[in-house]
Amino acid sequence: MSVLWSELMNDTHKEIGLIGLAVMGQNLALNIADHGFQISVFNRTYSKTVDFLDRNSSTPTLSGYETLDAFVSSLKRPCKIIIMVQAGKPTDLVIESLIPLLQKNDVIIDGGNAKWTDTIRRERKLADLGIHFVGSGVSGGEEGARFGPSLMPGGSSEAWNQIKDIWLSISAKVNASTGKPLSGAKPGKPVDGGVPCAAYIGADGSGHYVKMVHNGIEYADMQMICEAYHMLSSVGKLSANQIGEIFKSWNEGILDSFLIEITGDILCQKDPRSGAPFVDVVLDTAGQKGTGKWTSVNALDMGVPAPTVAEAVFARCLSAVKEERAKAANILSGVALQPLECSIDHLIEAIRDALYCSKICSYAQGFQLMREAQNEYSWELNFGEIAQIWRGGCIIRAAFLQKITEAFERDPALSNLLLDDYFKESISKYQRNWREVVSIAVNSGIPCPTFSSAVAYYDGYRNARLPQNLLQAQRDYFGAHTYERLDEPRGTFFHLDWLNENRPESRMN
Ligand code: 6PG
Image (tube, rainbow, N blue to C red; front, side):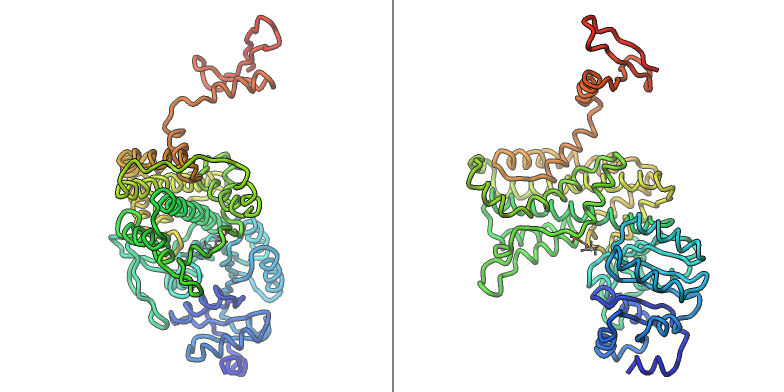
């Protein structure tokens, strides 16, 4: 009905358009429509548009179109068009098909998980044509898109001003003073009040960059939770259901977060077929779409230490070689599980503490990455605000993020979260347990790549002297790569003539 009605009316007043009616696109369109914005939708396969409109015929703010021409013509100028298609080539194809239909000042918004360098390229190309391009991170999965995602838009400030009302309205909301998410959005009944989990991030690819780091942190959070589960089941000998209950109790304290909450739920779930714990029937290989890898590759490219995020990606890679692991399990020896030397209550508490300290380290790494990227790309990122818009709606939403916002409020130039008083004190309070958990895991042959890499990161960061004096000497030995001396000013380089029996030293600059 809406299709015919829209096309018969030849209307040109829709406030926003959306292309791509996969689940995320459908849910975002419904969220926008529920907030009272007139929205036009378009999908390459028209039957999908018809089906979507049929299923939502009671939403008067929603209209669909068969041709891209009719879709664009239905929009108020300057028009705003959200693209919710697959990242990469499909996004470029949609942009190419839109260009001839657009005018100066129109705005295209890419809401997919695009690589930030693609967003920079697209923004530049479209800016030359006078068209704005916003790369907006959208986090929160299907439910977030439908009832309030966390939104991370990057692009020109003019473009942001054009989409701001809609972005602030449709995002998740948090309580202004506590930072707690406000819940209760239902179809047609959006949440009002509170601080929106959407804020202008900065120029060109910054929004997609911040979303990518969000995902890198998400990878680390998820892997840490898996390590906690592994320890509780192997060392603690607890059932999935018992561990689920532990996660539910953890969700009441410092670990309060969406991922901990869903983990409690998942672990208590029974397999509908066999009645066994659901997790016990799921194959232990993890997939990935690439945002964690991008985060880690970028950390390596920029020389920023983000080992915990990278370990989380590698843990998925290692999980994926299931057949190889199954063979190796019959060939390689480990060590017998250590008998538990502490009470089970202590083990549970220690694992919680290990999870918390490791989490602090991976967030510290994520924020350091964003700090370096802002220098690299001349962005001006507001780290406290980024933590705040992650407080609700997104996958890594957690009470803990409020502490990050507060840390950056105390010191906007904070170079590493570990140096903030709250995090410094948290780690000093919990580190004994953290170290104990890592040593139990290592001594029991249980892999804990993120817990242990986080401890190593922490110890590396807090050590004024590391063994890379030796490494640099090795480099000088075999490759004349030179070294600096402790007793000379920084930037003065020396080389020892290792091939000369007397090994004389020369100053190289
Ligand atoms: C989100 C999620 C979302 C998605 C990722 C995860 O913020 O809503 O991060 O973007 O779940 O694509 O991807 P992979 O785990 O498949 O890499």
